[in-house]
Image (cartoon, rainbow, N blue to C red; front, side, top):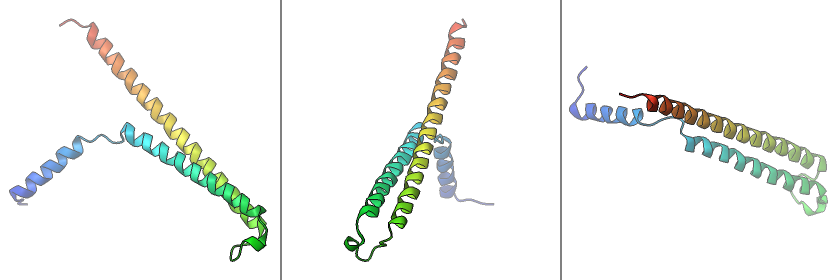
Length: 119
């Protein structure tokens, strides 16, 4: 298969960029847990709003479901989803911290072994 010089250099450049990019990075993991925290907070806020809607009389809700049980059910589902999202955020943050500390310990032991040698 014959590749032009431009295509070949483009593919080599892409391969070089991909080989220099570690995946996943610490920043990526921190952003992921932060996104789960934001999702949990949003779902919690909507759960509180839905619970408030269950307490409002139906005459103040034109065009909305007037059944308080429906609003309470929606609030419960959103609250449970928010709690699950917070749990995932906490667990991903903990696993990222363990991974970071084990990497630091591995590098410290490597430095200690190399530092003790005399060449």
